[in-house]
Length: 409
Length: 120
Image 1 (spheres, rainbow over the protein chains, first blue to last red):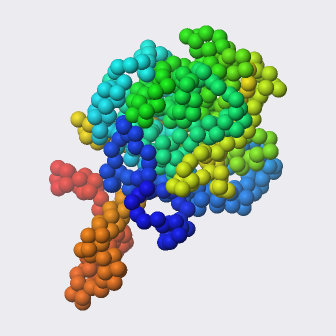
Image 2 (image 1 turned 135 degrees about the horizontal axis):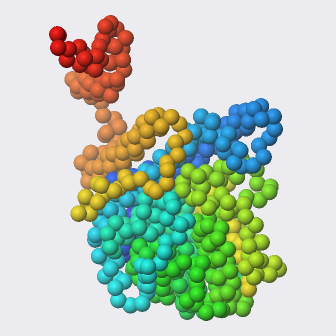
Image 3 (image 1 turned 60 degrees about the horizontal axis):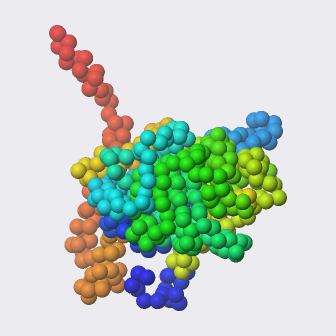
C-alpha cells in the first residue's frame, strides 16, 4: 500500500500497534489536498490521542481510586450518588486536570490543523463541489430550514462553525475539515473513509436480517454521508436519502459520493423531527449512526415518532450509539464517558446516555417484543487499521465499539 | 483569499464557553507548549523524510548519520550553538536570578512618576 516491501514478517511493522500513517487515508475526489507538514500534524494528533487514552488516562482511574474518591468520602461521609458528583470531585484532582487539559488541547489542535488545510483551499473545494453537484438531483438544499437550537447553541466537538455555518456562499470548509480530521481523532479506527460505522451496520444487517431487501432507506443526521455510503453500496437497488440540517455537509457529501461512484443516495437538507414531506410507510429502513447524542430530548422523541410513521410495515429502524449508562456501569466510567458532553461540546450526550431508549421507542409506537439490542464494532481493513474488536482498552466514549438499539415495525 | 481565510480563521474559537481545568494562565502555557510539541513532531517527520530520500538516492546513508562523529572544531561549534540556544530559551531564569541580586530595582512606572515631577 505504501510502496515499501512486504514487512509482515520483518522489522518494526511486525510488532507496531499504533495508528497507521495518515497517508493511508481514503482520498475521494473532493478530499482536501494535504502537504507533508499537514499530514505530519495529523500523525502527531492521532498518536497524541492514542497516548492520552492508553498511557495517560488509565492513571485517572488510579487518581480516582486512591485520591479523589477517598477524598470525596472523607469530606461527605458517603459514597458519591451519581456520575456528576464523581466528575466534580475529579475536577479537583491534579491528574484529571492535566489529562483533561491535554485532551482539550489536542481536540483544539485537531480542529486548528484541519481548518488550516480546509480553509487554505476553501475556494477551490467550493468550486469543485459546485461543479459536481450543480446538475442532477443528488442534492436538495433548503436554505430557509431553521437550524435547531441543539446544533446552533454550541459548536459540537469544538468544531468552529459546526455542521451548518458557511464562511462564504457555497463554502464547504467545515465539511472538509471534519472529513480530513476524523482520521486523526480516531487514530484510523473508523477506516480509510471513516465509514467503519456504516460497514458495521451492513455487516449486522447481513447477519441478522439476511432476507432484508430494503427499497427505500432514510439516514437521519447523515452528516457528510460517510456511514450511509456503505449501506447504499450494499443495497444498490435501494433508493437512499441522506438527511441532515447542515447544508455544507450535504453539498460536500453529495460531491464526495459522486466521486466515489455511489449513485443511489440523495442528500436532502431537512430536520428528522419533521418528515412530513414523506407519506406514512415510505421507508423500509431508517438509520441513525452516532446521531442520537447530538440531538435534544424533544427532537429525539419527535424523530422516534416520525420514524415509526414513515416506516413501512415490517420496516427496520437502527440507531447506532455509544453504550448507555446502564445501572451496572460504574459511576467512574459514567463520569469519564461524560467528559465529551461537558468539555467537548456534546451537550445532549450525558442525558441521552441515561435515558430509557426502549421506553421512548415504545412511546413512539414500537412494540417491546420487536425491539432490537446488540453490539457492533467498526469494520475496517485490518491489514492497515486498528480493529476495535481486538482492542481490550477503553477510550470512554471514543472507542469504535457501539450499541445498536432499534426495532422492527 | 483562501490563505487569508486560513490565517484569520484556522484558530477560531468554537461557539461555547471554554472550560479551564487548571489556572487559566498555566493552561495557556500548556496549550502553547503542546502546539510547539506538535510542530517539533512535524519537523522531525520532515527531517526523517529528507534522510530517507537522501539514503534512497545514495547521497547520505542513515547509518552514516548515526555514525557521524564531529571533529574537535565541529564539536566546539556545536557546543557553542547549544550554549547560545540554552541562553536564549532560559532567558527568564537568568533574569530572575539577576533580579534576586539587585537591590533598589525600580519599576518603570515608579520612575515615570519620578521623572514627571515638575521639580525633578
